[in-house]
Amino acid sequence: MKTLLQSTQAYQIIKTEGRERRFSHTYLLLFDDARNLRSALKTFAKIFFDCDGEYYGEQDADKKRIANLIDNENFSDCLFFPEDGKTMKKEDADKIHEESTLAPVEGSKKLFVISDFAEANTVTQNKLLKLLEEPPAGVYFLLGATTSYSVLQTVLSRAKKLEILSFGVDETADCLARIYGNKYDRSILSLCAAASGGNLGQAQGMLEGGHYKTLLENAFLLVLCQSYQLPTVVKQLGEFKQQKELIAMLRLVFRDALVVKTQGKKAGRNLLMKTEVSRIEQVAERYSLPALFTAQEVLSDAEKQVKFNAVFSQCIELCIAKIQSKNN
Image (tube, rainbow, N blue to C red; front, side, top):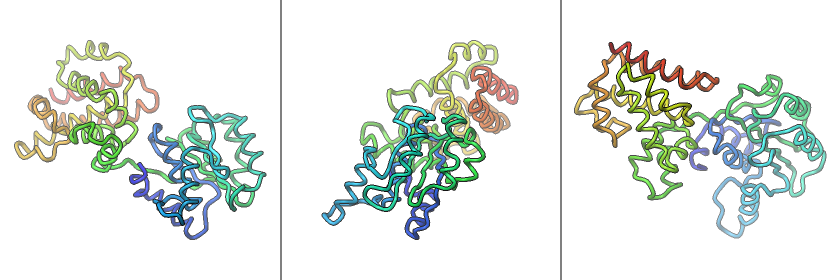
């Protein structure tokens, strides 16, 4: 994870500002990976204390100590809010106000790290406004969020916004390989990396417990069903929990089918779903080129709709119906 983050523009911006001793008072880090957001914030927090490298020798012992304390959320000058697994509350904001008046214990900086700030209610966000704009000398804020949609505009205007974009398929697969070792075949890692759209947390969720197998079966069930079967298949799936992942898997199925349709026997090396060549060829044979192109468009729209609380079963049924209609 650290390797992925250090390659981002967001990381390089804060790193440069730290090196030039011109940190902004408040940063808002946008990272659409709820599972790894808090961990990412720790990686960025270490930049403020110059302990984000790899340290082995005795001369680096103190930096290594501080890095370990930040990882464990125990460093006195780097305070994390809210408690892991909790939502930011007014009481947390009160505590931050109180702590911000106290001098740093070990150095000249005190950093407040707030995970998933977008989950905080309006009252809590408003309570921190003045402090975010004019913090005491040496006090900095690192806010993390998976989206800026529910962050108050007044907060956004006070923070320097940095966004971590989705990682590439190979980058994500490499990271998964570092995390899980030889537990999974490379083709499975690449499949999950591609289906997640470069979202490491989603890819991990697909791998663990074999959820990617269920996602694959459900995706092909939808893609290969007849028009008259569609309502029954959608009802059978019900309110599937991994909604974004299923839509991404559907998009991946149609994407590879498009590659097969246009490249024929040369498609092999360009397929992302190398473990599913036989079924991908079925999809390519069944759907026309216009339908395969339409699939990418309507499924991209579906991802946005589901993100903003559209009814998943209705959304997915309408998507497949549109693709089938274009095919006919």
